[in-house]
Amino acid sequence: MADIHNQKIIILDFGSQTTQLIARRVREEKVYCEIHPFNVNIEKVKAASPMGIILSGGPASVYDHDAPAISSEIFELGVPVLGICYGMQLTCRMLGGTVERSDHREYGPARLAIRDNSVLFHGLSMAPDTHKVWMSHGDRIEELPEGFLITAESETCPVAAMRHSSRPIYGVQFHPEVVHTAIGSEIIANFLFRACGCEPSWTMHSFVETVTEEIRQKVGDGRVICALSGGVDSTVTALLINRAIGDRLTCIFVNNGLLRKNEAETVLSFLEQLKLNVQYVDAADRFLGLLDGISDPERKRKIIGEEFIHVFEEEANRIGEVDFLAQGTLYPDVIESVSFKGPSATIKSHHNVGGLPEIMKLELIEPLRELFKDEVRKVGEELGMPSDLIYRHPFPGPGLAIRTLGTITPERLDILREADAIVLEEMKASGWYARVWQSFAVLLPIQTVGVMGDERTYDHVVAFRCVDSLDAMTADWTRLPYELMARISNRIINEVRGVNRVCYDISSKPPATIEWE
Ligand code: XMP
Image 1 (cartoon, rainbow, N blue to C red):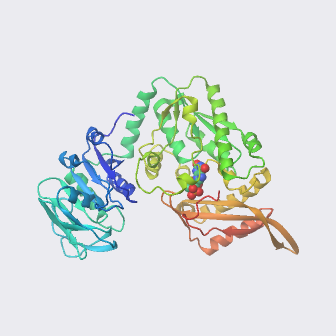
Image 2: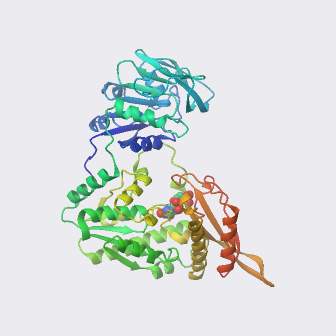
Image 3: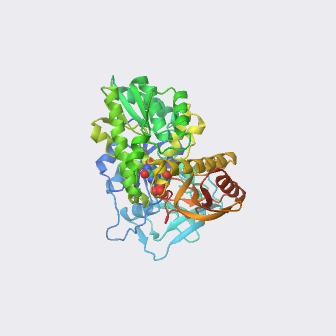
């Protein structure tokens, strides 16, 4: 799509785990930004005409023989540069200063004393040791490059921040992007508004307006199809396109027989409420037939993904001439980042319908490519989506197939659906649903002995899992109140026939994953 951002910040990523956080902080200030790998072609940076450039932190030492570096032209563009941690050390070294190599890391909170509050620290107190900031570095700056001055220091770090005396080049040794740095958002705002001269104009409202217009131009008189799952990303994608071209968008909602209890009805009624043009396909028998006897998780995913493509193609053919395929791809999926990505991207094949655009030979429309998940939710609000839909937990494409461990039968799916519905009901009733990333039940492939009344039982085991997470890359199990766990367990055992035992999953990711398969 054409470049719609006349004011943008470019973040060059040196592999810090907090690079995405820098982007979030910039966008929270209503300024658009993009993350690029540190070795992006300098011509690409110039062509983007950024208002400012931020150099992220990273795990390397500037003295490593293969230390990531950038073109020195970055400092000659006349564009303000802010180096954070490794980004500051690199700036220092490239401009002629010296960095002291260290074998131990300073990690954790530090007290900062500001020495100069002209730009980056504008409006912040210069009283000694007032500001708590977060440090995470090994090497540190020993000698400033010519023309630079110290703008802040801490007890253990004499050059905690620096700036050039006349050029717009700044550096901070600590991390303004993390919440532990209380003055972090002021520092980032000062860089954006005072150093770079940006305006806070990137809002979800302006995004919706511009993207709607872009879609109109791109699609012309064409037709678009979109696979809807009832999740936030695909629904917001469809709503945006619908706003632009009305019912020349057809949404296809496939029931693969692996949805949660009442899911198809709930989603359809939502979509109807939103006045989308939806084609509903009940393909449950087809999917369940193919999955008969299959227990390997990757085989399940593959079968479901392939069958989805068949069903989708058949439905698309019914519509006639179609030119575009819309997808709800988000920014974290497209960033060519060198940052830690988490193990599960390669451990499970999450791409449910990978290959669909190539097979169908359709041009792609991905209106959410530039957004983070929380921004997608804001767009959803902007477009009038009901909050139940906006704040739904993520649900995997292969659905209950990967939560019914072992082989899948209609009976086992029914047991899982009932148990899962109780988990969700109780999570919502207690107010915990909105506080966690995901909550769900899993049916285990074993039976255990129990006693009900006077009788011995030999029945199924259900596990339930609730996790806290920011992006599903890492997660921790939610510390639910015992009373809530007890209620969920009692209800499942009493109300779901065939279950006599309930477990709560207390594994974090890593080393476990969120889903059990
Ligand atoms: P894991 O289990 O890898 O899951 O920790 C991370 C996130 O991805 C979801 N997930 C999937 N989503 N297709 C999807 O669309 C899949 O095959 C799939 N497997 C896991 C999971 O629910 C969690 O949010």
